[in-house]
Length: 75
Image (cartoon, rainbow, N blue to C red; front, side):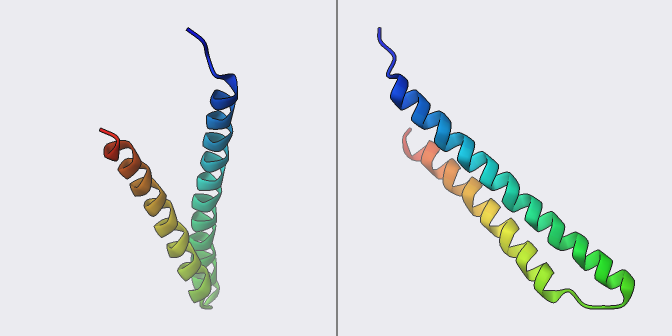
């Protein structure tokens, strides 16, 4: 039995990049919602921050659904 180390490293690299990207996207969404809370407390409006937050959360959900699709399509 041989291990294809190049393929294993490639899978590790792509998994790490997508994980970091997804966490960063979710963090941007949380940050956008916290800006809404701050703007509301100050009496302002943060519609752009809220819209950006919802877009980030939607992108995270789409990535999760796509990942589940890839896993289920192979079986």
